[in-house]
Length: 140
Image (cartoon, rainbow, N blue to C red; front, side, top):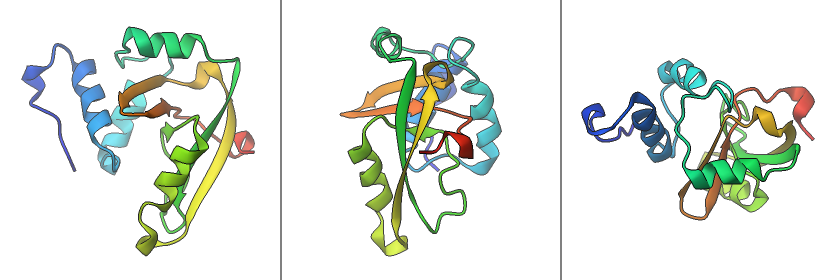
């Protein structure tokens, strides 16, 4: 798994973990999931630093947001992940980026804005929402 620069080069643990998440396009080890679950625990109580642009983006969201996630049908975790996007085309990219590994699937869910724990705008044109508690009832 990828790792960011050494922790000492960051102002806070939050800055370090945010950098770790952003640069780990392929996810994090199972062992780190609990750490990130705590890190992303609720938007207003989240330890994840948010830029002014990310805060503004979150502030301007409607009360209920449709989110998308692309995954490989052969992945045992399937849709049970933290990374979601408001853009169906981005989810399609992630679903189909490794066709040799199996069929890509895109799902959508509706969640209340307050369940979006963090917004990331640092991945080029991709907007990423961190939602740690999507359930079967949320799926559309």
